Length: 204
Image (spheres, rainbow, N blue to C red):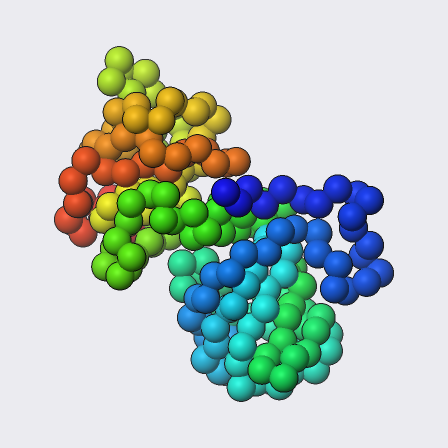
């Protein structure tokens, strides 16, 4: 299971661009990027960590050029070109610590999605909500503040300090489900039934 912990200091050598501070994971996510010239291109992120990303794309940027990309399920990312390849390039991400934490959680969700029992045909795509703050309620009435990382008609990933046991019944907003996985930032919830899009509108 991926957790995206930083590599130990001994393993990091910032002066060598091919040394990675974070574990990468294969993602294969579609998106669209913009070069410094404002030219736009379709692209695919092949693998990624909270610190860098590898693209396949017809664009041929220069080393050090600033790239802004909008990637499915991740949203906006930006960085500078650190490596050129025959089929694309890699960028070092420019992001705050908070943004890296969010990316780590999103990538963890993507990397481990098979453990959540979500449909493999992606009928229930994950969405990044605009209204992320809510409470997670347990059966005994206890409430814990949490932040929704993303959600779908089938489940949600939430950033939360507590870790209810796997299988614990919970309620997120008006949606009931159970805890199916723990990860570094919080827990993944599988809803008791497939939700309607109307049920998610409070968060979107």
